[in-house]
Image (cartoon, rainbow over all chains, first blue to last red; front, side):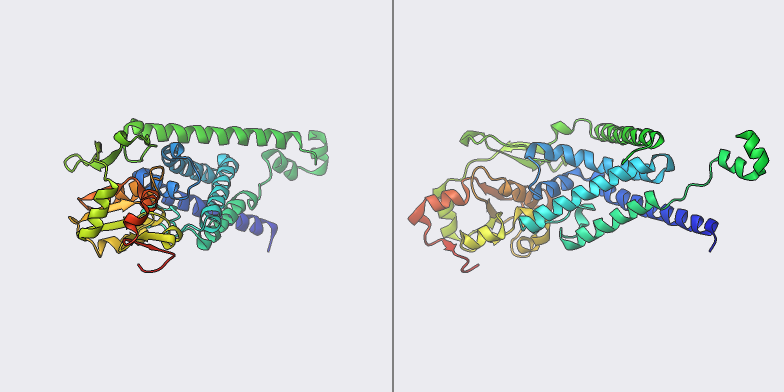
Length: 164
Length: 187
């Protein structure tokens, strides 16, 4: 396999990873944007946030998920999007671990609105997989040579020396 | 570990982009939910004074939540309801609290898992039957959460909250000794 093929393969996998993670985030954000009341109940059930912050979190987080997903897809903002997506995923993993395992609550994870699964191991595993996808979207892509470097590669050694 | 100048500039740019995305999200959330603070769909902390209890109900014509006052159910009235057998009781606390002690015949519907366990109520109680919901006491919110869901999402028309909760029942002592189950025995 040539270096060029490997680069194309890595870039393709990175794009697929970015699109998959972003797609899931948008899919998860839409029901929460449409029905923030349900999401507020889900957040409250975690028993982490004080009551005064539940409304605000229910209104803000779905939009943050959607915008972070958009940022993850755009190459220019991919790293920033990845930071936000990874931050949200770590937050979710922490919240599920605290409420479902430490407090022992039998609650809905609230990940995708009313149809969400129960908060538990599966939620954590899914979030870890999304975290891996986010990492792949950022670290896999191989940057092509810059136009200046490409120009240098095409020149003869003497010409390059002169140009340099 | 040394960070090259170009990398540092890139990291700074990413940080600004993170803040920008967060700000854009906040703007979009605000634009999509103008007037959210007027909504009653998520309960705000209520005062603990006896005369000031309010509950949220949905106006059937507009579909919007409205705040209406609810007369307080006293311990004597609760005892009477327990004895005449015409009322269903819903315990909105957590399973371990229920196991430690609950009203005889009460249905466990923890506020933390209302939707997962709603069948316990919908299969056993008619929509117009009287339901009394209770949790630990005046400071707990679980009974309000459960009552809201029963009224607004499952169409139960006669739902009352016993604000005193389990603390008041326990404090009443002997009066309720024949109406409660303790230590995880019975239903």
